[in-house]
Length: 239
Image (cartoon, rainbow, N blue to C red; front, side, top):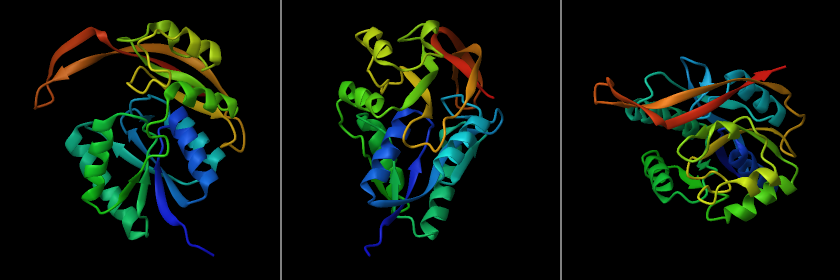
C-alpha cells in the first residue's frame, strides 16, 4: 500500500476552502491531518471572514478532520508570521510535508505563501489554481454545496449582498467587475452544507455590522478611518 504524503489544509470556512478540500480528499493523494485556521483571539472569530469560532467548530466536527488554530491578538504581519512559523514547525515534526490552500489566481499571495513555506522546508499545494472562476463556482453549486456570504467589501458590493446564499441567481446578478468567486476579496463566505459534511450546519442570521478600514502607522496608531472602503459583516449564529 502506497503511503500518502501528510498535509495540512488551510481552512477559512468558505466555499473555496470547502471545494478545494473536497477535491483533495477525492483525489486521495494526501493524508490531511489538520484544518488550519487563523482566529482573532480577542473576538473569537475567523480572521477576515468574521465568523464565530463556535460555527467554525461545527464545520470541523461535521467534516471530521481535527482543527489546528492560530490565535492572533495584535493582527500584525510580524505576529502572524511568527505564529505560523511555530505551527508549521510543529506540523513538520509530525511528518507533515505539504500545506494546501484554496487560492485560485492571486500570484502575489501564492508567492508569499510559498516563500514562507520554504523557510520551514514545506511544499505548497493549490488544487484550484488557475481554474476559470465562472466554471468553478458553477461546479461548486453542481456538487450541491451551499454557502452564504458572511463578509462583503463595499468597494465592490453594497450591504444588500451580505447574508445572501450563493446561487446561480446570485452569480448572474453580480456586477461585471466582480469575480464570480470573489477571488479579489469582493466577498467571503461560510459553507454550511455539501458532500464534504456529514450533516448540514444549522444557523440563523444575526445583525449586520459595518467595519471601515483603519489606516495605521508603524506603532499601530490609527491615522485615518475611511468611510467608503470597508466591509459589511453578517453574524452567523448557531441554533
